[in-house]
Length: 607
Ligand code: ARG
Image 1: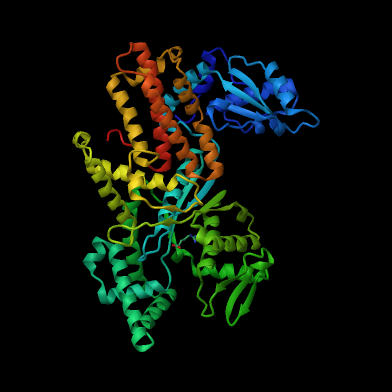
Image 2: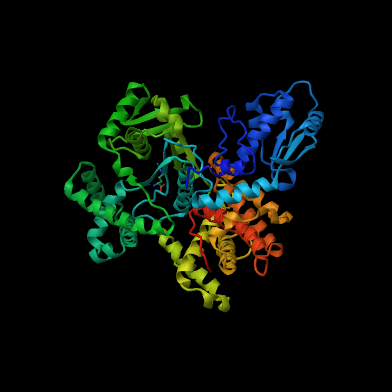
């Protein structure tokens, strides 16, 4: 259902055709009704103003609220010299031919406000949404384009902290978003799976490890072992000033770096078992990685090649055996960057350089996004700059999507070791909240499962609600509430729309033939105008890379739906009216569902 022509067909039924779009290559009028209107307005305003079409098209903007129109043009944006924007706005509003596309064109100070004809919206949007279903919102923007989204990237045997949680949530969303826009998306998890800590872990496992615990619960077990052996090392140093365990660990890691098969076999088992477990946990968040890469996966050869390229470009200087790149020559904030230690071992930043080169050679990506906390802003800027200085022209296609911190994320047991712990506790707490309403609770078929899904939405919506860069506080009570703008509220709104449909006993197939002339209430108009915006909202999110762009839209949508409930009844109405209203609600349900799915939530049908 991706490439339907339902909008064009719908126009035909209304005796209209697609406005000429040959001068507006950025428009997608087969997928986005707002673009149909953009094209119409552009052509018409061009005729009366003689301003070039591309300038008009780019000047069309979405107002914040529906009372200001469906689209606006701030006249100063048309870059006309020596005219009074207010006068021009008034003159053009008076001359404008609204045709059947628009119901009103208004001048408001220097703004032109355009209001879409409601009948067109009902007829085009409801049918388009119902026919496309899960694909409503799809736009053919990234056809034949490849994008890599790297996200989550936890460290094996170390706690999964809030930074990893945010990266997982935001990265999952961005991957879905690009897919919705037609891109070929590769999801990569870049594990912290290399370094001396694996020597430490191997030595620790010899002493404290249990094969059973490793196979049943690898992530927690490895962390336990890691904590114990670290405590030993600390004690040794306190007592004797040096640590025999630490020496052994170093030795073990040196063997790994040298390719010693026994040492590598242990490491590989830790890694494989951890990944197996990760896969299940990510699945709870509807995330599946295409590839588990990691710091271990950057080969010696790649790294040597990179070092050679640094040297060829004269980027390297040595200091007591260590190799550095002075990036301050290119950007004074970046300073000097260590790229190889004096013992010849590579470091984090060099591995990132090597991994990026490897990824380009493998995928020839058109774009690559790294979802990493803003604590690593400098690190990312450094390796981006290094790649640029290596003259890779694709370095300009790298983008860092960063985010702020989460404060106060702890569970009953204290530290968060893995995502599982957060999700388990959320589920338990959500379950308790649900039990507080025994009458409702009794009706739920599989309350544990629902508690899990709704709880996960609570965590995710809390995270995606405001701009990425903001820090936020992890607040159990608020995020689990059914009131206010929370995940449970969105789930409730979705399940209520489902129940309106269930209770109506009207077949899905009857909805397409509804008589939309029966929808005359202002709240219905607000709802259809909002539903029409969805493809535009997707496009905006692609620019902002902000999940909050979608979240804000969905809350707005659910608020309008809830205003409709007071007025647009389905139950007890004459059949025709009930069908028309239900068609509107069914479209709202579909758009809410699509938005929730895009964010990574599983929308529930009953709760
Ligand atoms: N494993 C790292 C950490 O936990 C995050 C990796 C981010 N990605 C990267 N390409 N450096 O801090």
